[in-house]
Length: 132
Figure 1 (cartoon, helix red, strand yellow):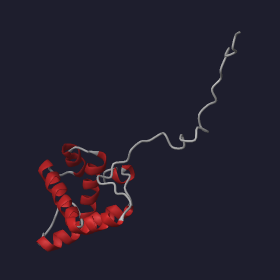
Figure 2 (cartoon, rainbow, N blue to C red):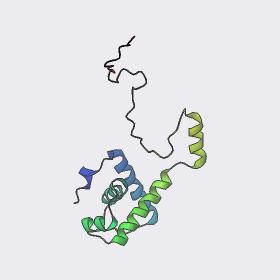
Figure 3 (cartoon, one colour):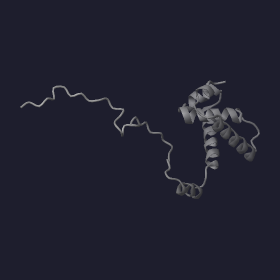
Figure 4 (cartoon, helix red, strand yellow):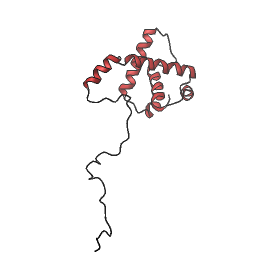
């Protein structure tokens, strides 16, 4: 088993949600068998989406072909897209909120608390005496 579960920084809820979506998709399509279980496929997909693992690396770790990795990732993204709300539902939620982050990007900001000036070091004025 690859070491991805320990190295992935995703919640258990995200993993089970994706695995459940894959299981329901497989039941809907009527797939007979797959090389990986839905849980292993979810870990593979999250390793690609979260850590940026290459298809060739994932294929080697799981003992499958790169084309199969591509199909697994595409299938999972389609399953996640099916869980997403429609544009009308999303806009209804946005209207009720004070602010919305659209792409989920976290910004690195190191200026928290600097408005008051209490966190700044005191300035020293050397030789500032006024000469007459």
